[in-house]
Image (cartoon, rainbow, N blue to C red; front, top):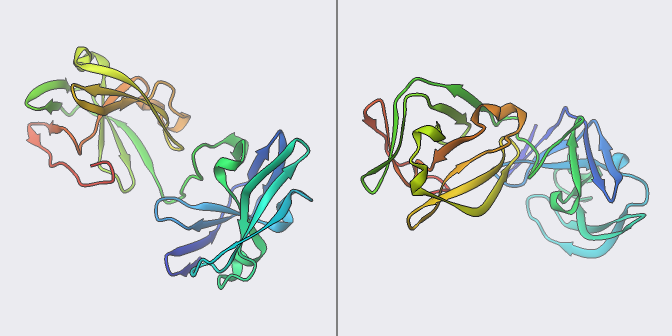
Length: 245
């Protein structure tokens, strides 16, 4: 593992493939995981595992002190050209990056880890999600009104986030919840749909079809600890301070 400033680099163990226009433009069993951001890694692919002829230098350059000058590429397939779809640091102070290229996640049509498609961004090997049934009594209040109370919650423990309490719809005042058109995606849980309560928009969410690892939360409702009052076994919890506050 290499640390350089805020950038961490380590080898990955999964086979990683990227598809564009029905064509695999990258296929590697030796990806690099590069934490360009603190929240999740980026996949860098060895140049030798990029399909021949798909990278075209766009002529654009940008300075990145931690990784060195970035060379921008378009990705070309038989169906067309995707501009600004990749970048590399051939003269990086981080040696491992000099012979690798990063394909921009959203510029690709599909990503696969082994033979399973993965969405949103690479899954962090240091991120863990545990879904556990519980018999604790959980009560949710908004402005003094009880909107949910259950002795059959499912607790979701996710690295770096507060415990989330997922409750059966039968234990939630669904008459107080109004569905919105908001949808968010998570590589560890799937696509979430949201509800508002009064003027508090998108304060609760649920997963109709979670990914396999998180199927225990299917059809349940969760409220932001940061925005409501949650009591567990009679003990009031503090509102955590997170990016969702």
